[in-house]
Length: 506
Image (cartoon, rainbow, N blue to C red; front, top):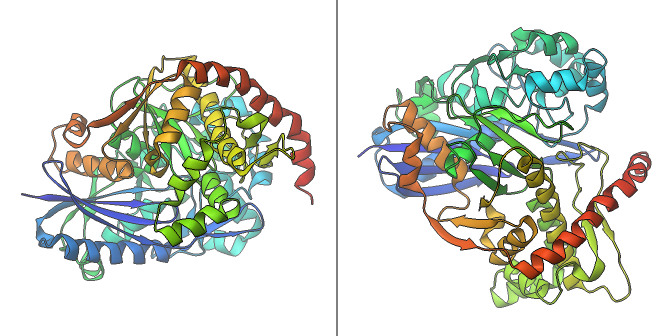
């Protein structure tokens, strides 16, 4: 028996997962690393922390699984997308990585758009030109840290940096490249039109390969650091969004899923890009060859839920410690004391600006409708409803192109049945919960590695990994109630857009 080692470089840490060539999850472990949030909308991580976490988690996993490292046939990575890591000719990071949720490069976004229209750019790259992407971040480095820019040999995404540390090869894959704002979806090449508009040279970007491409082998140095055997194959891998699509079984057209982590997204698999007339959604290159991965991303999904736990549900947090119970279960029990609509309380979940559907870095969170009768149970429900309303807007955008009657939900937020039922009621769709909730990106990376190494014939092997554990149907009465409330959620946002802009200067 041979094994596949998958790494998933997320926002809060790296998860190492070992799978057998039969699709069995053998073991996993996670090593965390910090994110530094500052200046309101800045967010950075140290690439050296990524490498340390990969080394530590690999060593722990090999020890935990009690296998010999020479039984690992291939290593494949999934990683957070849209970041910017500047490296020199030796591959050393020149500064902390600016990660996906960082919004500092608004001016640079405007500079690019002074040379190309948003509509023309969207038709090339499948995305808006926006501060969350790599290209505007690179232009910010050029404008604000010229000495760093001069020393920059290449810019890479998170998983690409780790692949370099493993193999000494600098490269990326189509899925991560499509998250840079600089990649032409139709030609699968760096876009000269976009790069010209940004006044950035193509030489700063790495070579691009399919996700299944075998990039190289574990070097002697990497073997000593990780415990892997030198010469082990390393697959190019993919961005976490596209890997998650593979891992949740969205490997064929018109299959929809929702990932609910710190950030979140609704994703599909299609044969052609989906270009929304209002440019509210984006399309990536899929890890599955010749397919695309349209998504609508929410900046703070689970992160807003965690904020609720930390700032409002302190009593439940303390009670969970005293009683050794799950704090989220206590929150769910309290939520059920509030009816759909949270007694007239709305919550806007824009705690770090927003991507889909508004693309507004100035958007802020808000409770609207507070009264002296408002209870904590109403606040809990309104937060969860607000996050779900925003996802529902994205689902309806995609429904303009394809039907969505069923949606598979994964991620840490999918553990709570209460929230899954709320999604069914608000989306008006069947919600499926699979056997793996937090391993989709790892499974996706493993399958990519397995296909690349010839262990698996094709991506349909996902059927060996997944099974549906539960299906939740919409409650007709609650679905009807939510249809009346949802327009108010939209109205609340648009009523406050001007105020959000004013608040930015305080």
